[in-house]
Length: 289
Image (cartoon, rainbow, N blue to C red):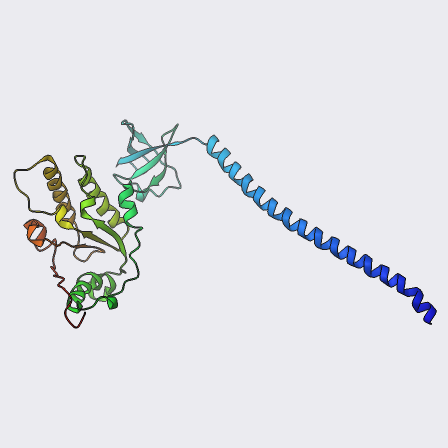
């Protein structure tokens, strides 16, 4: 028995060595396989990107137009961006109820068929307003203004968050913060256009709260004489008043304006129906401090 055992030891040792060698080879192959899978994943992404780029190069562009009028169930009068007007059809899968006057659409380059409807054209400045971070400040972090906070919540939050009281289902979300002085543009008509696009964007993304800081920059008292810049500000104010007159008091778009100079504001801006509640924010009292 001892002689047989001693004869088996070299065989057992050799078997263990072969096992360890194969185990190391297996681990090495597993590592290489993992690397190759990662390479395959990267190559697949590159292939998909190349396919998309190739399709983009081979595809035909589309013309941006605007629907002017619906003639029949299948025919529409559209105006292309370069000026001419056409009577065209639309794709069958398209929802024709969305093709109303003023809707932006994409037209086929060859047949001018309406391929899809496009969202409203929005100025980048207006678009960026909805992506501002309102921060994490709560009402509890504000001291000494309980009455003002109560009035503010009564005017803004209650109509949006209590449908059983105001017959509207809504939720409140601060979507836009505007510094009024940033609206004033040196080009004639640009400021009024920005106001118009801002309110249209708010209507399309209800519920929405528009907060306009430093409103005295565009809402000052009007007068007959002044420079071209003053006249541009007056045109901006007229557009603002026009947009405010088109709002429903129980709607889902609310407007808040702030100023340090209420004495300079135009009376037309302060009349009931436009700004229904005036809230003065005083200095904090001794208890709040």
